[in-house]
Each structure stands twice: as C-alpha cells, then as structure tokens.
Length: 143
Image 1 (cartoon, rainbow, N blue to C red):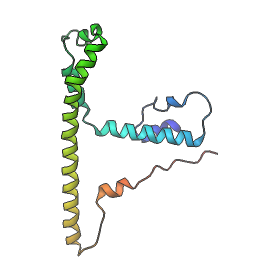
Image 2 (cartoon, rainbow, N blue to C red; image 1 turned 45 degrees about the vertical axis):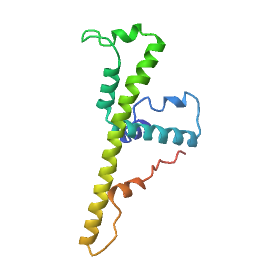
Image 3 (cartoon, rainbow, N blue to C red; image 1 turned 180 degrees about the horizontal axis):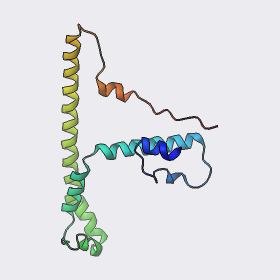
Image 4 (cartoon, one colour; image 1 turned 30 degrees about the horizontal axis):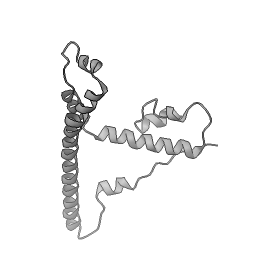
C-alpha cells in the first residue's frame, strides 16, 4: 500500500527512510511524507540538466575518461572556492531564468483567464494553477 502511494506521488523508494525502522506516529509519517512529496515535486520542476551542467562546468580538471578525476584530489578549500566563485553564481543564473519564466507563465495564464472570463459574459473562473494550488494531500486513515 505505501509503495503504491509513494509511486503515485512520485517519491523514490527510499524517500521515507528518514523515519527509521521503529514505530512512528501517523502525524510524523504525514509530515515526512508531505516534506518528501514537496521535495520530489521541486526536483521534477527544476531544470535539472541545466543545474547539473553548471556544476560540471564549475568543477576544474577532469577528462572524458575520468570526468571527476580532479575532484578526488581537490582540497576542501579549493572545492569551497569553486562552489563560491563559479558554481553558485551559475546556479543562481539558472534559477533567475527559471523565476522569470514562471512569472511570465503566470502572467500569460492570468491574461488568458481574463480573456476566457470575458468570453463567458464575466463568469469568474480561477486559473488552473490557482485551482491546483488548493489541492491537498488526502492520506488514508490507518486503523
């Protein structure tokens, strides 16, 4: 039952491993499930390939045969420097681009909703994304 629920919500098989092997309360299970569901949803929505590309480009050295060869020998300080000076600014640019796309998408949806409302003699209809944001997770009760 839990495996089917996890698949339905896009969670990995190990997503609830943070709960440990002991008994947990239903509230603790629900809190962990919601947190992992939110994280899985963000992972699916983020531009993963672009983010990985930023990380790969920011790591110095390596070769096609041994792509992370330089990472193995890097000091902690050099890795921190690469993260702070190269990788994080590149990731920030990707996220800013994603943010701009989301804002534009919302603007287009709102304007299409207004046009749709006008076409239906002023009947107010919430945009699809607003209706979806009000959906809640309904978990079955455990006896």
